[in-house]
Length: 255
Image 1 (cartoon, rainbow, N blue to C red):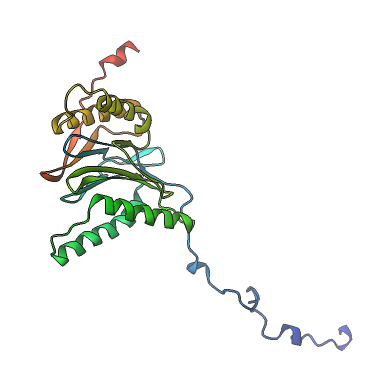
Image 2 (image 1 turned 60 degrees about the horizontal axis):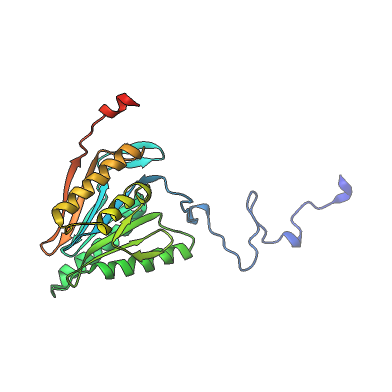
């Protein structure tokens, strides 16, 4: 049959791929799907606004305790402001899983400082510069960490406040906000700081922060009435809360 054709493999097919597989060309990788890396193209489980500003002797950072899954208000008791050490505090918005990844390395740095026992601790500007390099490096590798981090504290006795985003863009300012806080809370903070008739001390700073969190709760659909406030001054760093917004919906009757 077929003129005595030999249907065995020809020399061209010698050492060819197995049935269902692909030929391995020279200098190519044979990695299997399990070796492939997957990267997020957009944030999924996210935190909303973080607000922060300087007062006369320190820094205050505030954020609610909500983590949203898309538009679903999914996790309602998650910390987004943290005390790093006695001189540094941070607040985070954006993809919370990415922040959990980077927080492991921040905690490792704090543990190393403790083990060295040389009375030297991670300062806010050092953490700010390190996070800038890390986030910019991740962005250049096309694997960005989708987070906004606000770093505050005392740098040699002087209040410091800085912000780093997921592209590694960084800046320092007297007042910083992320998310809708840029539009809703930041104008209120700047008005208070620039047009103050009396010194903005710690007590007034906390009251201003509470007012901003109340505005964000009323105006931002992905905000939450429970929040925490981190402060850092000459007496050390601390996180207060959870604090609840004093809600008043009587005005809704007139809408």
